[in-house]
Amino acid sequence: MFIINFKNYEEISGPKAAKLAAVAQRISKKYKTKIAIAPPQNLLGIKYAGPILAQHVDNSKTGSTTGFVIPELLKASKISGSLINHSEHRIPPKDIKELIERLRQLNMVSVVCVQDVSEASLYAKENPDFIAIEPPELIGSGKAVSKERPELITNAVKAVHDARNNTKLLCGAGIVSGDDVRKAMELGASGILVASGIIKSKNWNDVVDEFAKAVIKKSK
Ligand code: G3P
Image (cartoon, rainbow, N blue to C red; front, side):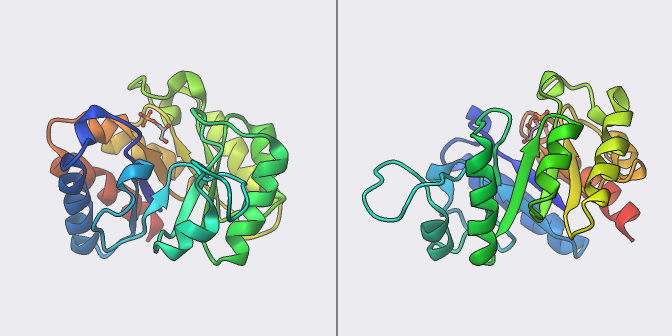
């Protein structure tokens, strides 16, 4: 799995987001591989043939919950799933657990972001589709988790495996090259969650192509 988190970067504001979505769609088709995109909430209606994930979802009820984004309405808008507990939008453990279950009931994809191995272990027990480990200090740094903290990936892979369910491990933070992606996959990750390495690059096509190639090479 390869997820591009658009965050709220100026580079993808307004119509620019559609350009990046078109690049992801073209490359996904070229390699017959899934690339998920996570645009900001105001751009969730973007045209994209692959999976669209919300960057955040609230554990709020349907009905009178002004300004909250809830799973049932995301589902009704054909959104495939959501990141939960991203480092830049952390939520309490009780909400994380309840949201994993709510998304499961709706057949939606859950991607729980964690900062360390103990969190990976804790939330893997809830059987989300994916755990994404991202050390906060490397996010947006250009220094890849796969090279700076390789042990974090191998230990998180083990923690997820020990939960003995279907959860897969993704990793992210500072990934900027195909080599960073290859290294993550060699360490046992099932994919990547990436933002600035793509959004801030001058040539979206080349970088998405390079990352996709590195993800599928190992998944085969
Ligand atoms: O969600 C992706 C993320 O937090 C990693 O960000 O910019 O280091 O790829 P970045």
